[in-house]
Image (cartoon, rainbow, N blue to C red):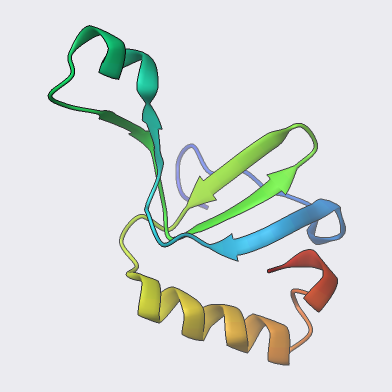
Length: 84
C-alpha cells in the first residue's frame, strides 16, 4: 500500500468518471488575482463517496483513462449505473 493511500468500498462508489480537466480550481483565488487559478487537487478519475468527491490518477491522460474505464466496465468492476 502506498503511504497516505485509502481504501474505498466499491459498492459505495457513485458517479465514477473520467475527468477531461484534471482537478478542481480554487475560484476564490480568482477573485484575489484575476490572472491565475490555483489547481488544488486533481486526477484523471473521480467518484463520489458519501459526501465527498475523490480525485485520483494524476499521471494518466484522458485517452488512457477512458480505456481503463472501459476495461473496468467490461470486467464488471464498475457497474454502468455507477459511472458516466
